[in-house]
Amino acid sequence: MSFRPDTNKFKQEMPPPGGFPKVDVMEKMRSRGPSGAMIWGVSVAMITYGYYLIGEHNKKYRLEKFREQEARLAMIPFLQAESDLDWLYRRDKLLEREAKIMEGVEGWEVGGSVYYSKTRWVADPPFRLQKMYK
Image (cartoon, rainbow, N blue to C red; front, side, top):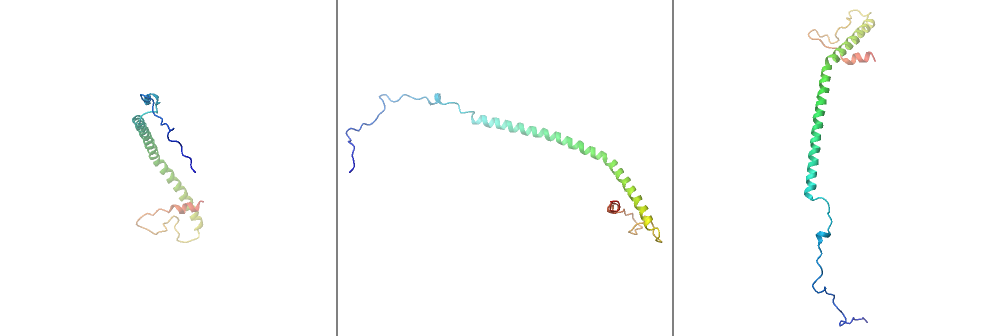
């Protein structure tokens, strides 16, 4: 069997006469940080400043690279002269060695072109000199 409460003793709770007092929500609410517009403004300012710094760095980097390239271009004649002297030294050593090896062969011309070209000059391949002196 089920127990049924007595409906005559039941009393509904109601608000006090005149209603509940007003609650000022804005007064009790604490500040929750900067507004969205302020966050956007600060973000845009920071990003703009960051791009400005990148641009300044790129200008300095470009100038540094330009000066480095100028220095390298200024050294090219000296490096080419050094390379030419090295090539002449190696060629002289190679011709001495060729003369020593081929001294018994008749008709051999020391330093002659292996291509038998009378119309144009053909330089010795660089690997030939490197192989001889390694």
